[in-house]
Structures are given as structure tokens and as C-alpha cells.
Image 1: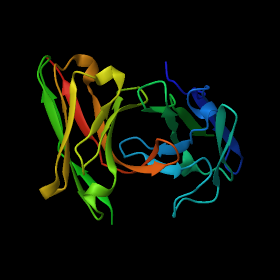
Image 2: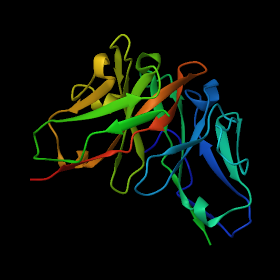
Image 3: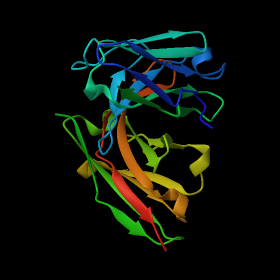
Image 4: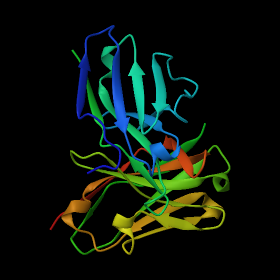
Length: 112
Length: 122
């Protein structure tokens, strides 16, 4: 069981908008710790999409956006493209786990 | 260009140990933590711990305490992760990642190494 909860899968047609949720608790997201998002394509290294809840590193398209409220965070992808089909993970910090970084269980995005 | 280059795949027997290396280039090696994350087949990402290359200080996830050791050699800008007493459930791709500080205690990981497949097989 992951400390952060994500839906196992989401899907959308090309051009559509999808969101991926990441639900935590009072010891991580709810305590004000920041959330970061990664895209993971099979056989490659994970790549950061969003850091600090809302910030996009240079080179990440503005189709990707992040938000955070209360004990949850979300990743939104607009203008869905076939190349977006991948696994997505949220990550944060949990003070009750000896200062551990924690990941969500991952969400498989299928572009229909 | 900031790069982390990891060592090649390993095959080990149960009970053995494995040591994976991660060579950093393109930035000041001692400026940020190196973190280790693994992904078992069909599973999600699992954070294993961090190592501060400047001080050598470490912090390990509870699941790995007692079995993992993270070290470094600053003269060759290389970090190492050693996992002992391997079992079949340790078969996974192991990644190193530069931990960029953010907020209170937080880190975001960028870049990541290319991954090292460790297979535990009797």
C-alpha cells in the first residue's frame, strides 16, 4: 500500500483533458509538504514534469499543470497526445516515516 | 549537461550482495543529495534513501534499514548503493537521482540515472 493514493489507470482520447489525483494525509501533503510529478515511459528513466506543486522545469510543455489543495494534489494534461501514454507518479515528503520521501502507486495513462 | 551514469546489469544469487554505482557529471557533485529509487517488475517506484555527497550522511527508508548502505567517492564523483542479503523480491531496476531541495524537507528528483537491472535468481 502506497502512502500516497493514485488511481491505477485513466484514459482519454487525443486532444482531450485528463486529470490524475494524488491523495495523501496529515503527515505529508496535508502537512504542507510539496508534491512533485514524474512521467515514466517503459525502459527509460523517470522524468520530472512538475515540481513544487505547480512549477514546470524548462522543456516540459505547458499542457502539463499541477495543483494542490488540502491533502490532495492533481496533475492535469490538456491536448492529450499519443506520446503522453505512460505511467505517472506523484511524490512528496512524510514526516512520520523518518523523513522519508514517498511515492504514489502510479497511474497508467492510456491514450485511446 | 547534468548526467548520472549507472553501472550495468547484475545477476545475483539469494543471500548475496550487490553494489550499484552512479557517476555524476555536469554539476558540482557535493551540492545536492543522491537518492536511490527502485522499481520491481510490475510495481511502482519505491524510495530507498539518500546520501549527502559532501558529508557522507545518509538516511534510509524503513523497509531497507539494516540491508542498504549508500556511500560515495568524491574524487571520482560517484555514488554507490549496496544492498545485502538479496532475495527474489529485490529483483528490480534501481535508479539513482539527484535530489533538488524544495520546501521543508522536500526533494524533487532530477535528473535520474538510466537504471540498473538487478536480478536475484537461484
